[in-house]
Length: 591
Image (cartoon, rainbow, N blue to C red; front, side, top):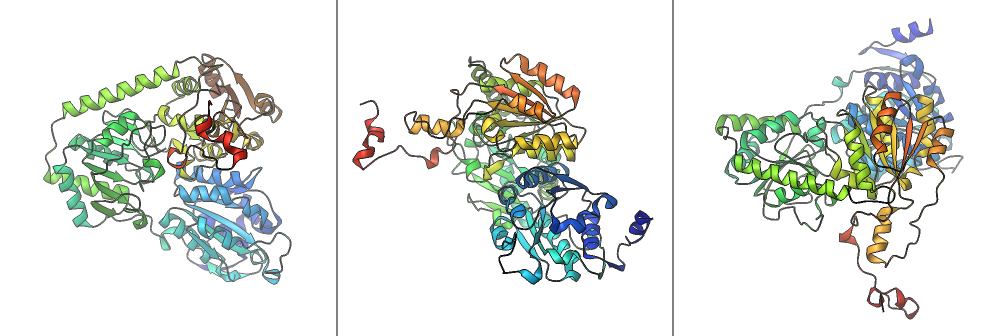
């Protein structure tokens, strides 16, 4: 009877009497929200009580930071904005890191943020914090509910901005405003937000086509926007029409199929040398759906590959990103798919499809082959017990083509950028440029919830694993069959490499003593395996994939085989001026 009455109250477009909690939940239902992530709290319990009847699953995590990482990945895979919630004060502030990461990753998300009740605001009461001020610089907007009659309206505003500006929005609601009575209507999303964007200025599109037609060595750089807009097919058509090699932006290896003859791989830290040398020669760069981040275009392998003289055509949905980091010849503010379609349509009309440029295809193919061989050669160097590159190579060979892979930040996780290849979109879920550790595992859980039928694997270093292993109990409790591949070198290896190269092997704070991760996983109810031979990786992976249970693979890798420093641009050899520190000056080393 209760369910029937609740269902009958859902009359979209008609005003009806509701409680604020009901108005919020019905707005979530209209937005196709299936899961909400967080930790139970008294502040929102009245709303929480409605979730099961509304068909919304509450996913309780062990730490609120994990909640927003889960929502972030869920959104990247499903396209539906993730929703998180926590107790006012500490529950919400625990999400600061993961919301900041989602903001820098351009991931639509709504943070339902209960705050102190209106009668007590400003008294520094129990669990009170100025959450709006805290989140202002790490969200696209902070929306405050000022009256119970506005709860649905303000939530619609939060979703509208989250989708329009591609990022998280804080929906701040004093905890007493979940209660009471109001009269409102539940609108469908089409009534208050527009998802489709235009294709940009027609004159700019025309100029872009002319520039591409005249270019001798054009290169396409495909980014996250291409994935979000489902634009890979049309980008492929542009590339094929003019025989243009296609690179993908940093840590978006799924933005163009790796098996395409014109694909050259990712740029950025530990990316593809084939992509870097190809981009270095470009006279025109068509950058679609990428902000051309500073970190993602820094030199790597001592190759200063981003072309200084090339004419850049940048297509981005956000006008703030046009020419933000690199000067452009043509800026196009538009949806990646719509803009790419407009470019392709004009190319078809005005530029005859070029005969296959065999010379360029051969050069692309040769560079890719050389890079693939280099990766294999580097991986086959013996390690004690396993060369981390060998572990990555064996892991990627063992995984099915449709596997979703999340990667953390750190030495091995970032080296994975060179080894990860995808033929489908929404498969690569990376920590990106906020660079916080502890991302990959909760992100993998969110990705698995978004696509239950696909295998999902998280690549994590043992340092980052210490920040996220508590969520194994979440995976077990909720039956989320993610495979955590923990690359265990007993160190914060990225920082250790800095201490090798810049601080004469003085290791301070970079060594890790940790419990047996295999036994910890088993104690939480997951499958656990320790791997010390590279040949065992494929066998264990295949076994675990068949089990479809949460699993932790504790892969023991060599702690001396380290990737180049992340931030050569920000590090200098140490100099010391005080006598007591002179022995630490780099000029004294070896004397």
